[in-house]
Structures are given as structure tokens and as C-alpha cells.
Length: 321
Image (cartoon, rainbow, N blue to C red; front, side):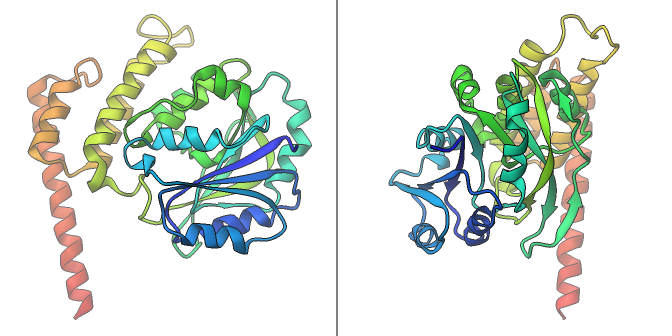
């Protein structure tokens, strides 16, 4: 048995051939692939059968669990494997051909480190590189990772992480958050409690902004993302934030929490009346402004977002003439 399992929870066939082909193109083939079809189309199995040169186990789950518990689908797919290290990949992203080779070159140096990761790029539906994420530190603890997420210093994508199975079991797997929003950030904090997170020297993962994934599908999941975000911030306060308003290094955790929350609210815009009211009512302890001020700001942001959408639609109609 190899040391590494590449686990792919699959549902969308659109880019699956490209994703699995990038796995098959690895210069180091010491891994076993596990594909868990979450009640998706037969095309996923057809793609698996078409790929040669790698060890692959395909499993079709008749029940679409990801539609109500995406983290649950992740967990049951990890359960298909038994290797000591797990790479939870995606059905539409791309791994550089030297990623597995990079992992094996450094795995013996990790010691008590239970989480490793690659640096990332963002690509579009055609595979064109849209942006490069700032490089991660060579080593950071879980608190520093969460701090960077709150401050928006760099992005983090679930597919860039490789984790030790022992840490996954110790933490109870991925926590069941609505549409798994923030569940991966919590996992990397939980999984890395023992030794921190190591960034591997080589290998780049390309995360696809296709418009088909949860990150892009805002209008369909606004309520779930808002609820998950508020729950995530409660976790940060309870499990991550040092006691007191500031840590010994002078970091303003309350300010960082507010910054992250406001960025999320702007990201989810425009909001309807019910969700706007939810933001105002449920952001006590997160948003420092009085409720009346919050209501005005949310209303202004929503109006601006609606206007931007209207202008984009008008521009598209004019360009189509």
C-alpha cells in the first residue's frame, strides 16, 4: 500500500476528465485514487474507466449526500481509503505534475506536522490563469493560519491540503457546516493542532473559478453561507482567539473578526430583506456598529450591488446588438 490516497468527491462531470488526467500525469505514481460519485451522472464512471496508468477505486453512492451535507460527502469519501496520508481533491481542479513527487521528497521531514499544502493559482473555465495566490509561509501554526484568513492576506482552497489520517480521525473529520462553508478552514486548524502547517517546496494546484462550484454560486447559497460564517466566527472566538481582547503580540482579534464578517457580507451582496435583517440582528459581538447603523450600511450595499448588476445586464444587452 502507498502512503498517499488521492480522494475525489465527484458530482460534476464538466471538468472531471481534465482533473483526473492531471492526477494521472503525476511524475510519481505512488498513490491510490478513490472517486466517490455523489449520486452524479454515469459520465463520471466513464471518465474513470478511460484513465490508465494509475491505481483507482470507483464507488457510486446512490444517495446525493452533498446536496444536504457536503462535509458529510467529504467524510464518507475519505472513508473509502486507508492510506496514512489523504489528499482531498476536487472534480474540476488541476494538480501540477510534480505535486506527488514534492510530497514524497518531504514527507519524511514532517515529523509531528499533520498538514501539508501546496501553493495555488486560480484558473477560469478554459484553464487560463487568472491570479496567483501569495505564497504561504513555510511553516505556520493553526492560529496564524486563521488570522491570515480573517485578514484576507491570502486565499485558501481545500484542494491544496494533504493531511494525516490520524489527525482527521482525532478531529472527527470535517465539521458539518452548511454547504461546507468554512468547514475546511476549521479542519486545517483542528488537524494542525499538534505541529502546524507546512508548505511544500514544489508543486502548484490550480483552483478553477468555473461558476459551477459553491464558491461562485452565491445566489443559491446566501443564507447557508451567512449562517456558516457566523458559526465559524463563534468557533474562532471559542477555540482560536487568545483570552482577552488582544493577544500578547498586540493582534486585534475582535477587529479581524469584524473585518472578515464585513467582507463576507459584501461578498454575498445583494441581500434580500430577510437576509439583511438576519445580518443586522445576528451580528452582535461581531459587528461593532449599532444596529441602526448596520441596517443603513447593509441597505446601501444592497442598493449598490443591485445597481451594478443592472448596469452589467444593460452593458451585455448593448454589446449583443
